[in-house]
Length: 96
Image (cartoon, rainbow, N blue to C red; front, side, top):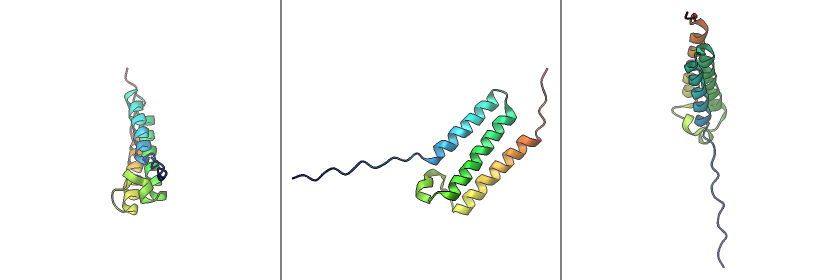
């Protein structure tokens, strides 16, 4: 008698993929002359990455794990805040 095959391992979606999709969408907005909106989307994606890194276990956070949890969250949140601040204070003038 043969033993039953073990179920295939479950593949989880890497949280970094979601963050990269958000960043790509933000960059696409910037390319379509929606500078401020695109910068806010990129900042939001980085803030979401910081939140995911904070709440997920290291195994589930997968590619978001670089250093310790606190350092990763601090760096991602600081980048998000910096980009959002730049989006807010950048003067945008119409050309023409």
